[in-house]
Image 1: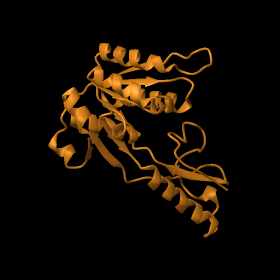
Image 2: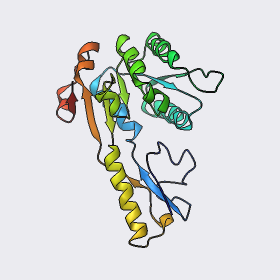
Image 3: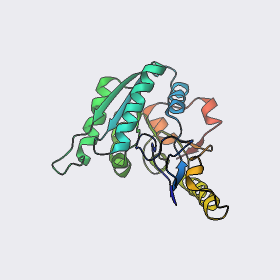
Image 4: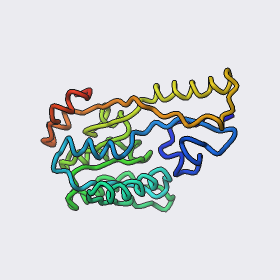
Length: 222
């Protein structure tokens, strides 16, 4: 039996057929991402004139490409403009750290209102340079990783905490090992509780103080 966790898009990555039916007798897991629709709706509440979203992605991460495609489809459905920029890959097939800041400046020049981090281990690992460049360009970043708000300069995150996701995976394992349920008979367990965090220092720096309705729901840091 196998239980996966912290996978940005298990369906798009062909790990499972659907969240309701994995299609594999020995496999189930957890899904920890907030729907992108919720992120867009949050941006519209935060910045009522929001109309243009920016996204950096890197082609050597499947999860990053999947999020690009998801946001492209959502932009048509929800009626916002989307500018996507692929981070150039070096000779070793990986993005270069020094390219993230110029890419953020390019998004600024394109007129984006918000940057969605999407799903990128590279940008997460190099969050200081990436989010610092966003602040320098006066751009808010919405991140699926809470640490970018707490430990770096992203403006806002809506995310399931990894500890809680791990506990949910433990519930799945208990059903398999204790209750004797076949993994493939279990749907992928979805997180329903998300932490909503706003970095007030960044909000002041870029001149985007959150509206009261978000402050009532969010935890503020810095």
